[in-house]
Image (cartoon, rainbow, N blue to C red; front, side, top):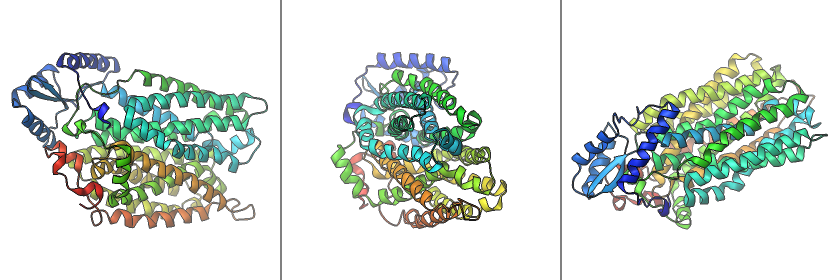
Length: 517
């Protein structure tokens, strides 16, 4: 985090005022306080004040308390010699907004891919041209990545989410205008699609920064998982719902309108989220990130970063490619667009359930590295098995393999992102996650173009099959496995941020950020 973001000047009265507002937000939202474990709000503060009475040692003792089991949801505040730790309930409002934006921006991405053949008829073009709506969206992410890092570094999650919302609003209504013009204007729709693509990194790269700012070590992986995996959930909604909204070419404008309305409603709350809590949630949250120049130097010299980046970018790229082309992969074998949409939903929904189970476990155990080393080979084997799945002409094989692929992939994402923050510390969480996501989007766009080029012709059996593209995916996915298996043998695996939260000062950390630890 930028220094300006972590200079808390709020007196106790202001913190208490925001806490009172938090109670109102929770009542309005119908949320409970399970994670906080705060039965009465004020009593939590009194407990911490009575336990810690000597200035600086309080910080160490409080952070150790968080790391040893109960990990009370507390935040740091210096009130007349007392140090208090508390996380604010209003963090759930910001997290819910992150979820909404990631859902709608991903729904935008796959709006037309889910009905590629129908959209091609509407725009009087081919499915290959429709693919560029997805490809352009992914490439737009890469273009916006530097601005995303700067925005999160300087302005924090709030500015990033406001920027995302504005781009989503303009992009969606331009897409709709393109479908309403007679004849339909594919160029205008593409321009609107690119604007939504520019919006995506501001939402997708924000979860690690948001969880670092608002959540204690007890909940960071879960918070990152919920917000990050809302993005593919939006894709699942698009794949599952859009085929029902556009059963024929003339339905495309109304389908686009419905998505635009949903996106508009989801974007508005961004303007009302707070920029940061009045006090930091843990010792590590008091950290000031290096400059962007120094951040770049630290990341490029850190071999652990590259060993995470390569498989992460490759697997995200293949997920994007597979999600965009799933209809064209399955329909040559007699599957309908609805069948393909359900298959895409299975991939994503099973993955979300798996991540919901695994993330709290990782939050408690911090077993990042073993989990990564188990998940990566499973993903590679799933891509290998999927080569033969469409040819069975039965829904069972694609559904089972996609479910396994989704479970491993989605569980891996938040774990990899949070571990990345640990092993690249003191680099801020926004830089590593944005670069990894940008790599995945760039490769996703490239993989879509390559897969379309590998598509068989009309004389193949069956016509237009994409089996060669599936073989390409399996080979590259397998090539990424050694990177994950090398973690722990090459580079540093020191959990720097967690070390600070446990009471070890930043100065005690070895040179892991530079890759020599």
